[in-house]
Length: 53
Ligand SMILES: [Zn+2]
Image 1 (tube, rainbow, N blue to C red):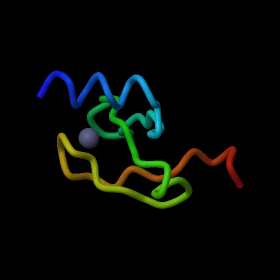
Image 2: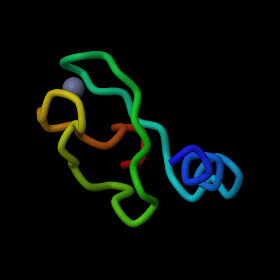
Image 3: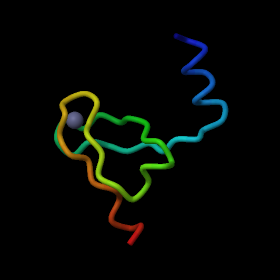
Image 4: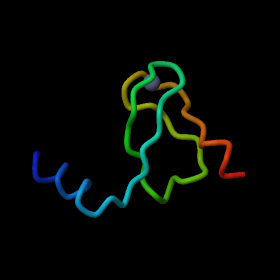
């Protein structure tokens, strides 16, 4: 499992996004950039950064 995480960090094909509810940072796939995703920790909707508009 550790090498999977290292691969994510190494290529950085994901974006960090902070959940507004639980304040935890998670990686969102580049394919989900601009989309609302579910927080992997609490299940809340995490909207994309408003500055992308
Ligand atoms: Zn959350």
